[in-house]
Amino acid sequence: MKKERDPKKTLSAAASALQSIAKPAVQFLTFVIPHVILLSKSVYNYYEKLPQNALLFIYGFVICFFGGTFPVLFAALQAAEHSGRNAVVLAVSDLANEAIVIIEESKKDDDKDEDKDGKRDVDQISNSEFIARKTKLVLAKMNPEKVDNAISSIYRVWLAVAAVLMIEFAQTISMAMSISDFLKKPIDRFLAPTVRMAVPDQYHKWVPVVLGWTAKAIAIAIAFTIDSVVSGFASALKGGLMMAQATYQFLVFREIKLGGLVKSPDHNESSLDEGLSYVFAGLGFYFQLRSGFSLPFPLNFLLFPFRFAENWIKWSLIKNS
Picture (cartoon, one colour):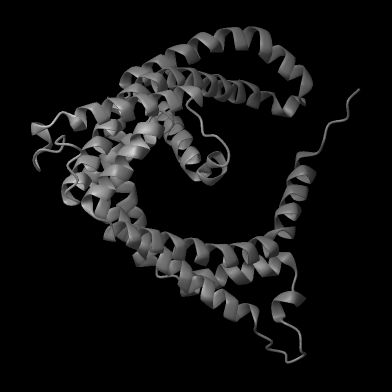
């Protein structure tokens, strides 16, 4: 007979494991977060200084070649543009500044040697005492009003964005829910009994919940894969046109006539941008089809945060529908 584990001992072991990684985790975050914030600010400042046609070309390129990979994320960003992008930027900046202040104070705290024995105080305390010490430091140095206002601003914009996305992806969400309901019956009938046999009795109540999550995850993958093809084609057309118009503006700015194809500053009086848009759109959609609407290496590694955000937004829409 299989011996059941004591839930209290399991939780105690998990808590001990978390405490054991507290110090290295704090050290890692203390090192990484300032660099990430500095890099993000540098990229944003560089973005703000780019000329309009360069921004149009970059934005069009991203939509043209990756619109089917991140359809929900791009739709969320577009909705946020009209729902309070500046408020989000300001809120994120405030949170980043608060994080920098706390990290700098944490570094000073790490170097303290109040008993003057030549060893840092943080190296002579237990993991639980370390967690309590850092928690007190965060509570003491944080500006709660600024953090509360920043989080509230982000949440208000997210509610507006979620409302727009629920309408925009209503058909896809409905498809995902239908697929989930269809999968739930055979899963409950054939898979659930086998899973119950494999887990201890006290965890049986989790079986239908976890299998429900699994059914939803599969349904989301199927529904949004179908949607990715449609979104990929539409985004390739839209992004290709933006790239073509940006290219035409660049040629006008540089006074490059291309044998008379660039006739005037108005792109509507020339067919060059239309021809270029077909080429860009074809290349963009072919790239998305060839890659299976996923990211090739090393883009899949570099753009992992975008993939995480895409999947999180999808899951949030399905869960709240």
